[in-house]
Image (cartoon, rainbow, N blue to C red; front, side, top):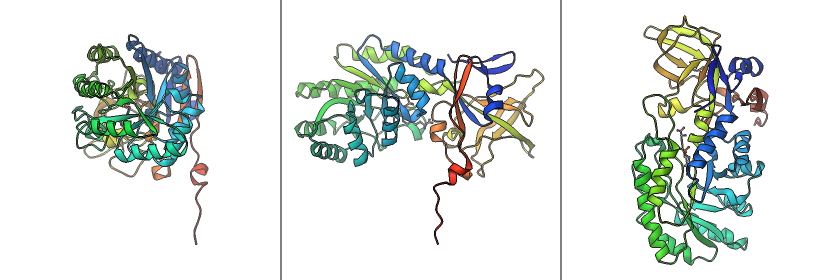
Length: 417
Ligand code: LLP
């Protein structure tokens, strides 16, 4: 459930009409509903109420400080993958004890910063990284808490670019090599293996792959404990999908929790989860204005002021995002069209060959489900300033990140002669 709906034929975010925000902020802009964020977090968190757990929201999905702050106040911890994300969670006052550090290529500077912030654990993805953490922690006179990220070789049945738990993916340590590496870690002076981690992919729409992966890592966890390696934290990553259209409805977080908890019965662990998309995806929309409507020989193009630099998901993953008129009119016909941006690439589309309501030049449209991997993946391609970000709470809204200016884009560039 989210808080985007029509009232008097105007699409609202909570109690604020999106056209009102557009009039004040300009377009394109991302708009986030704080009530939806809170609700999604609470539903997810409560689903695991039966066990000791920590929700570490995955910052990469949407790293806006206003979003992180909203979730931190709700009790969320964070899953980070860079020094930049570490700085963001510090800015919202999150203690290291609620932060896990994931990622396949952590630099020395990033590891050092995370050690200084005393993160809960490093999710280690290779022997090289393990040795690097051991050396850096040694230099600082510390013992770094670690988990190994296991690649369980399970097919998440999602888009190949966002599947991570298969043998051919760069992620994690093959489950066949994991026990050996844990033994090595247990013998190192400056790391302390306390956890086991696994993340198999994103936008999963069925529960089986999660359960299959859990079965694999559970066996390993039991084996490690038998050998005297005291694994306390089990991090099952993120990945639960959201409904982008009415075709594929992923399981509700309560069903997801039930399936995991069923598998975990009798196993004393502190469960960590790293949801991203399921918390923010449907808490955000991208609002754009139609610049032109062009009738090609084969099809109609709705040309908007938002492009693939603002929302790359359709271009990169052929992702489906619903397109809604910000003002509902009953004389609108449904037409077959491409909704495209101003960028000089044929992959610059928000929707392709889609039956959508007819739009006129100058009208506003909302791209739904854009809260996750929308702004965070946006770029300055074609020297376009990144969109503004707005957050709504009930009948109030605030710009939480102003639209970039062309001046800002150019200010660090230097001529060379
Ligand atoms: N934990 C780890 C280690 C991850 O790599 C990810 C996402 C998550 C948690 C959060 O996954 P989520 O709950 O959001 O599915 N840009 C792509 C998605 C990339 C996901 C990367 N890793 C997209 O727009 O679909």
